[in-house]
Image (cartoon, rainbow, N blue to C red; front, top):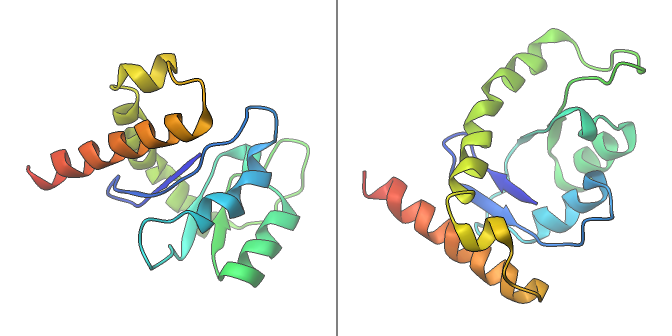
Length: 133
């Protein structure tokens, strides 16, 4: 799981097994930030629509969670914060850049620590490419 800012710069990266739900990995990912500052808002897809997650992020981290509502839930957010969700393509662009590294896509690394190191190396290369433009 990764967190990127609005420009596509990586802020945090965390590796875990595929079995836990993404909502349970948000706090572990935020604890692994590269920078000293945390974002004021997180944008996630429908999987992150959870009242418990919203309350925990606001209480512990001071972060507003923006996620569209699932079909089977009542509306918890008005339209204004969800307008920010339209810019989520900028975040998806970061994940597309990570997919350019074959070693990450195929996952040659057996151990999670080695895979995390390769993902961090990929983030470093993405940062260098963005800075050198």
